[in-house]
Length: 434
Image 1 (cartoon, rainbow, N blue to C red):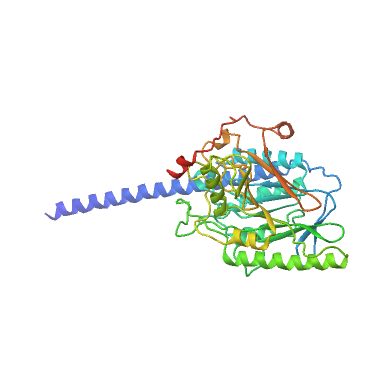
Image 2: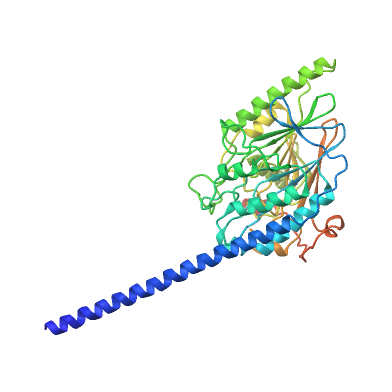
């Protein structure tokens, strides 16, 4: 009996040792795979950083150089038209799995910025896309470094507002860390600032354009539109945040303060006072009013209404159309109340590129750059490009959507073959059936 028990115990020990050995091998394989992935990520990041630094500097005749004004805001001074290029959803993965697509994104940005020669580039979120099963990394700083290297080499002034993917819950670095990186004084052309500490988010900024008399002709407000809410930490339920109440209050207070400042200058020059400064706002996640406007337009058979005036573009995101915040932030009402902001530019929904007036404010989706986030989007081209914004010396703003696949861009750097797919608007009945 004792002999049998001994044999059973020996067999159990043998099985235990075998299980431990298998677990050890599995663990070793995992460690090796992680190590190999880490090395490959370093190599791919280095390669794309070198690629970013290989582009030629943009030749801009009489380039405007911004200076800090008495409020500490970056300010451009000019009596000519002022040109802004809006980029959105660049989606650089920064890992070995996304390296080829990251290189495509770099080519696209470099070509469009080089051809347009803007005074300022504003990116409305999602420079980074550190989703591991697509990028091969959790390191969102790598993609930020690659993009910053590109923009600094191009030598064009630039800033950005954060998108939901710039800092995911599982990313190595949070918004404060990435904000600190972009705020580095070593960057000659990056105008990004963390923003007021008492205001939620990072990167809430004011950039002004003044004429030679010191009169502000246009203000650009850049906001952090945050990420996910209501327990949707990974964003898989599409529960997006809104601008926060203290951001709205900061906006209203800043508008009023700048109007007072401008009127004092006008009075000193003997010109008409009470002339409110025109402004534009830039952020990633669209306002709920962007959805309201499109639904009203679609319900009316895609014809203008009393509230809505259509400019251009299509809505290609499917039946939900606009993936705005799930709450109401009061920002649109604040814009109507102050009478300052006449244009809003956002990103986030890559197949949307429509521009539409709603109650006197123009709401515009920027054309996206993305080669990575949406499945198969790197093979499609109709949605890819930039938005060119022109502000006249009188502060009148206009914008146009510019496809990446046109002669003025495609002759500059290597370009991929894509299908220029047809994007059509869903009928209102299809939208409501969602």
